[in-house]
Image (cartoon, rainbow, N blue to C red):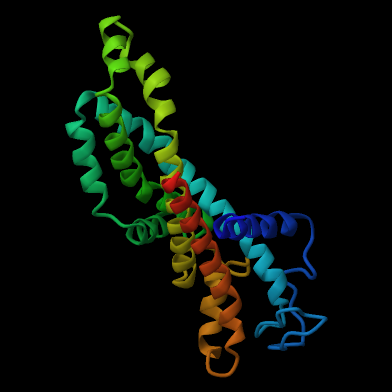
Length: 252
């Protein structure tokens, strides 16, 4: 089995398991603070005595949720606009795309946080909006190639409506490149959410988030490096998994 499938499957499995079971309540504070790994606490405890393994499991929920919703927002808006831009020219759409590229996810999250308050939802929406231009560009490029095919010319000669051409001929042939882009952007969304939570612009405490766990571990790097190692490995493994998944799909 490919490493990408294993890493992605492990992340999804952790998220699903945490829905029904964690060794301890992820937010349960105990006097056993900064304990090392043991049979009682597989990954030790943090500075508040909370079980690290339980928080890693709960953090996987946030990671998968943010990735799925952000990719869904970017794809559901970006793919139709990219098809329209590829079929109709789309000068205005591409100009708006270039303008949106000037606003990275971090800046959008800061603005959204200032207006609606910092939360997982606002960070997810900001990450999703920031991903729309990439889906538009990829989809438009694929659409331009598809529109040169003979079956598209035959459909046009037969006076098939453009919307029907897009639905029957263009969209099905874009599945591969959209799937690759979704996999790559899922990895970027995971990194973005972790970065925003680290900066205090994403998931708010005490909710478990891998980025927030890194933030809490920063003052303890010299004395308790494992506090940063576990969430760091979780983020790196998930991002690597989705990147490998996208690379594997691209080769096939």
